[in-house]
Image (cartoon, rainbow, N blue to C red; front, side, top):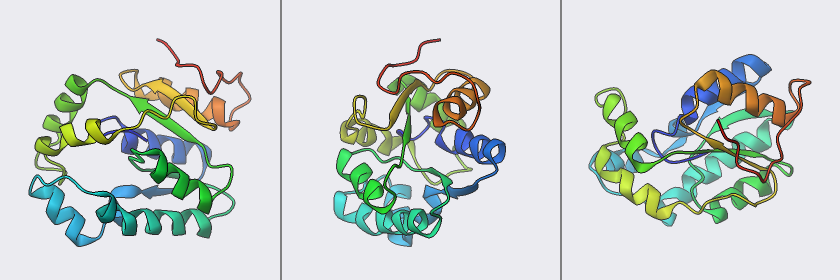
Length: 171
């Protein structure tokens, strides 16, 4: 989870592949109106996100043996909605600076619907999940392979020591 440009899709693909899990790309579950709004530079509201979260929650419910989901889950209420669908759900929070997020969002212009103009609203909406149960906070600027390995270790998929879930990991 994290803001646009944090690396959610990249890391989720790698996690799903390494763990042999189904991948659910959160962006694929936005209703067309949400895509139109974001493409036009209009930030989503809680009401806009309601159907999207319900669709992702349904995916979690439909895959009780596990899957990997890339999803911004910016507010605790959103995360709690998803936790209700899948008790024990865990979140890897890819924390990045606004500058790095801008750089990454600009790099994908033309290949993704999310414009730079909506990025500030994501940072304004973000409720840092550090300290919530089942959350691993990571520096999203770390290399994708390192992030993937740390998340797999923390999730118990690999038999290596896991970092404390409430402590930020450092490079």
